[in-house]
Length: 258
Image (cartoon, rainbow, N blue to C red; front, side):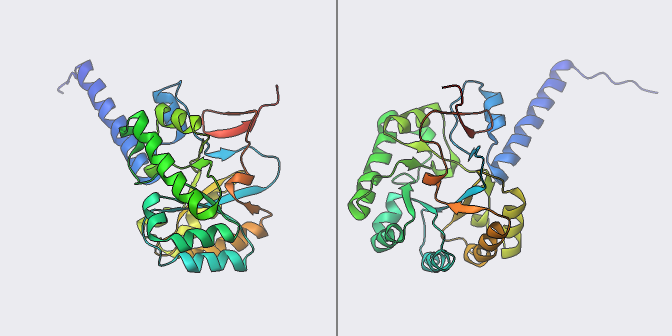
């Protein structure tokens, strides 16, 4: 019988490769979980992924950075179901579809900031981050008369600088804890099965306005959420605006000690 000895350095390197591969798979499929982000940098700033609330409110959100073919149908569904949601719009989308921007706002939905050109925000300088937010903000204000104060980083890509800079401009940085993955072309059943089992009180659900089957899945999801006792509100009516803290999982809590 042969006995093989493996150098400690080889084991360490193999473990590092495994960890990086695991994180890469998580990022591609779900985005890096906040608990992993915290492990990698314990002092890292976190956006709001969900909210710790006593009642059964949840928020539905749509990111819009390309296409508009399915937006009118989504608005019709929301109108029929008497539901208000949050739309995160890029400046590029606002430029192309100003009438839709006005309509979204007029129908009572949050119109919020998704950057101007949809870049990886962590790759930008402080001044570039400010420019991305302020330029789009001005476009939204011009069309809706309302200043956005929620910001969702494109690709879910953020770091301390992004969150701190956004906060200095009056923005709450918003992520999600339930991802439909509708942008990947999942069919109706797959979207439903990704969303409904993962919703809890205070959840923020991510959709995209131009997903292939988003509008097909949406009525069933809304009906089931209501059947399960959830009230669907815009994110602006879900989050705490002050006297709060965000835990290591990105869940926002009301600070009871102040």
